[in-house]
Image (cartoon, rainbow, N blue to C red; front, top):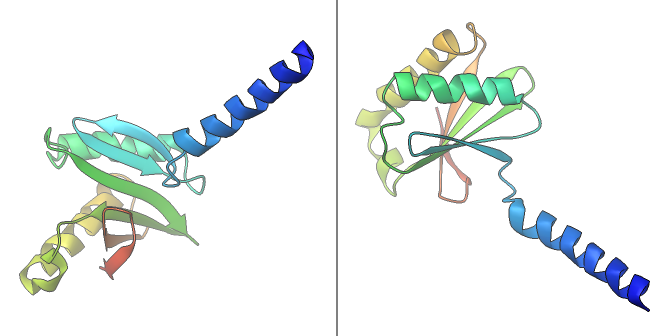
Length: 128
């Protein structure tokens, strides 16, 4: 009976770990207040390089932000949580496109990068 209970507790512990420790956004690194999530389609080294660049460029400035790095085919997807309404302001378009270009050049050696403006649950609102 004791072994059965131990086995049940182990199963519950494992299930609890996977349910509560996994956000569904990928693994997470933190850089000066910015959470950098990354999926299994990219490496931790890619996420680390991105995070270091975000600190260097002062994007990661101590204020709470969340981004996600993933890949679609050979294109890196830099997915960024944005405040409501920011994607409706076309004057921000050039800034978002420039950020994608800088990440491409400075972090991923010119590989294509697409910026996705997202809700706080990483649902895509707009692609740049």
